[in-house]
Every structure is written in structure tokens, then in C-alpha cells.
Image (cartoon, rainbow, N blue to C red; front, side):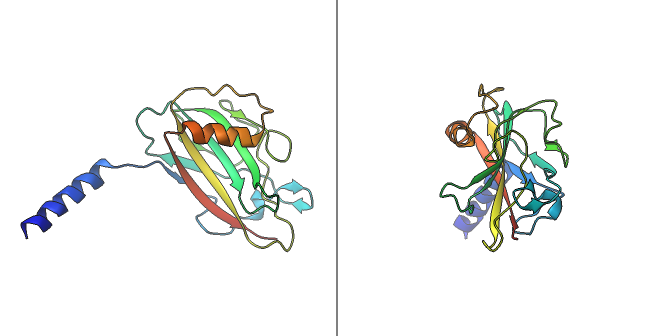
Length: 176
């Protein structure tokens, strides 16, 4: 009985002291279909091409900036599809409103797989089934990552994975 009580106290202490980066959205939800508002406008798609509202909290100690990425691991390319990469978001920022892409006053939007910077909405091929879209917020240990806006999105992904203190992922879906 004494051990159960001790285990209970330790578990409670750990849960009070642990925190993990969290990402949420008013526009997209874990495992649910995204609205046409977030579909690309081009390449056979005719959506609103708006970036979704995103919020994040519980950044780990040492966070000096954030990055946001949106990635489709189900794209029929063999390497997925990068829909959005934003670097150098100040550590004091904890949300982006819907449609923020192209209007950011702080942060650097780099090239996506559409060939240009900024949010490129979802646009899976017709009949290709359900695609997952991973919106990730990255907590980073430096204020600025010195990469050019025309850098390959794969290099951005590699850089973020090599240095992130923490990350949180929200995965929404879409099908055409």
C-alpha cells in the first residue's frame, strides 16, 4: 500500500512539472476534413488558398523563435509535398490568424513545393484518396535561422529537425 501511495505522489509530481508544446486551431481539427477555404487555387483546384488560424502554447524553456510547416506525407511524389514553411517567428508570438500568409510582418515564408513562398493550400489529386496535412509548430533555440526565401523546403525540414527543442503536430485531412 505504501508503494502505491508513493507511486501516486511521484506520478502527480511528474504530471505537474511536465509540459509539452501544443498546437491548436479554430479552423482545422485533428483527423478532420479541412474546409475548401484551405484548398489551393490552381493546378486543378479552386479553393480559397487561405492559411488556417494556428495557436501554440507551452513552449519549452530556451525557445527563442518558432517555425511553422505544413506537409502532406501522402502526396504521390515519393517525398511528400511541402505546403508552407515559415521561419524566424518571434518567441513572443503564439498565434497566426487565418489568412496570415503573405501578410506576415515578422517571420520569413520560404519556398514551398508549389515553387514560391507563402501558403499553398491543399490540392490532392482527384481520386487519390484521403491525404493528411501535418501542421507543425517548431520551438527553436535561436532567434533567426539564416536561410534564403528560395531555399528548398526539404532543406528547411532538415534544418528544423536537426535543431528543434520541441515540436507539436496537428494533422487535418482532405480528399477530392
